[in-house]
Amino acid sequence: MSLHYFGTDGIRGVALQPPLTLEETTCWGAAWAQVARANGVRRLVVGWDPRTSSGPLAEAFVLGVGLGLKVSLLGMAPTPAVAWTVARLSAEGQKTWGLMISASHNPPEDNGLKGFNELGEKLEEDQEHAIEAAFEATSEPTTVSAPPDHLDLAPYLAHLGGVELPADFGLVIDCAHGATAEAARELFRGGRLHWLGVPADGRRINVGVGSTHLDALKAAVVAQGAHLGVAFDGDGDRCLLVDATGREIDGDQMLWLLVQDRLASGDAPPGVVGTLMSNGGLEQALGEASVPFVRTAVGDKHLLREMGKRGWDLAAEASGHVIQKRVGPSGDGLATALAILQALLHRPEATRWNWTFQPWPQRLVNVKAHARKDLKGCTALGEAMRAVDVRWGHGIRQVVRWSGTEPKLRLMVEAREAAWVDQALTELEAAARRDLDLA
Image 1: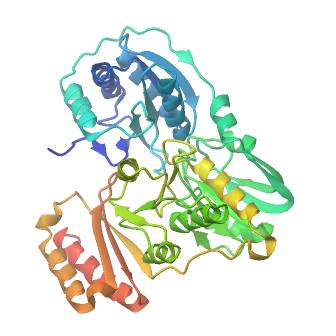
Image 2: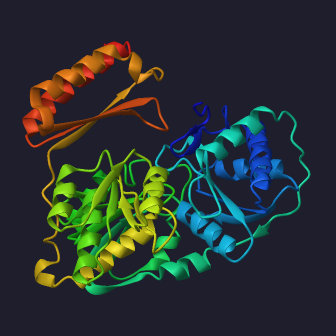
Image 3: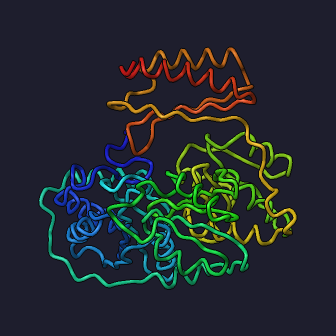
């Protein structure tokens, strides 16, 4: 049975509208507490991003939790800080879950609920099913609650440590007016720093800034004559880079740099995990370096499951989610940026910027639909995909999937020849629009 409310990254939608009205959010709190207690959990850590709706939603959720769990408020914090704190508290002997109130890279009017288990990883699907069932069975939750206690970010920041940059190292940092805006200032030190997307501002979060809007960062890097630019998303669980010329450096390239850094130090990773969207050039580069590589479905929870199954500790998505299990239990934009900078500083100046792999031509098209439609029923699209396979065989790769958080059909094509990519996407998009009544 498919989930009704949870997507690939929690529950997300327009804030204060179904299923995230204040009344419903109180019911979500009651449902979460019920399922958490059934799993032996006694404590809940709650954090949020700076959206104007986050505070009221947090209050409503905690009210619904009632007396069922001890609630500890981390306050405005990056999502990875919640995950790391949950894992630390659980390791100290009190089984703890976490909740982050955020809509990640979405616009300011959206919000969401992200849940973490005692390992600091996303909830399992059976737990999400249980929460949905408890939510639908809850009409009038108990609203008697004990005052929550308060945590701060100091242990998390101390764990990350930060980086000291050389005096001449130019770095532009874009915090998306989001949850990293305060923490980043404590972690990035020295160098020639220039800041975008600060301060934290719930009315401007992700508006023209951040990892999904890189134009401002590209312009600033070039204007400042900086060596590098870093852009976080609204909740800080991922980042993307821009080089000195304004060229984007995605999660695939960042993963390759981290692998090279470990190889150079004699600490070769046993293997790394990517997704169906990972570039073929990355797979080729890893193969030439004798580093095993496997793909999963899109979503960090799939990466984490594969990592756990294989005992590997490094994974990434092209979108900028990089998981370093040695550093923390989840994707962490701040930890990624710090690791990238340290890896660059480990390299001789003469070859510091000569490390990227040659990507295969790849392009993604998003088709915004009125509503989701089962892909099995998209007959025109299916026929177009089969025709592409017949024409180019193993020389091309197609990925078609619905976004986990929006009614967008994502069409990705990768091939050794750019012309193949453009032609195939033109045919796939036209077929998808016919199936979705958008033609």
